[in-house]
Image 1 (cartoon, rainbow, N blue to C red):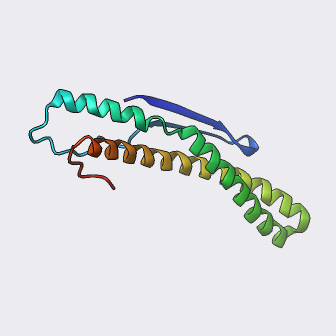
Image 2 (cartoon, helix red, strand yellow):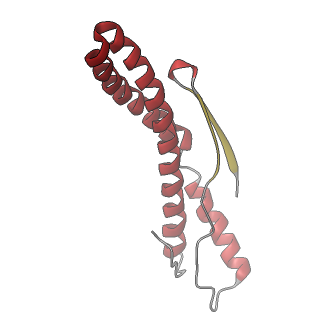
Image 3 (cartoon, rainbow, N blue to C red):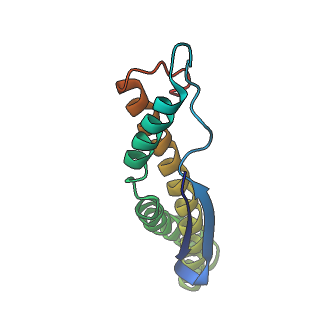
Length: 133
């Protein structure tokens, strides 16, 4: 299993780094009457499909979405308290926080999707997979 480092520079100099393998844990598969060598080969084949899902793209997209949402919420909150100057400060802070939270959420979502791709592929290869959710 290959691991990748994701490093993103986000709004306001906030840097988010997450180290993540493609999957949270090994799938739970019924190994009754299964050739372990064939299973290992099939698992590697399925992992190659799961690794095609781009964690960086998930993190980037969710980071951008979080930055926009955070800027809007922060801007409104700042405007209520401090007017235009507060809106600008609130938007900047909200953007940075939203970007970081969004990027982490996106990376986590990608990991879940990779795990699901792996398990679906193994199931298609005829294995009984118990932890699909």
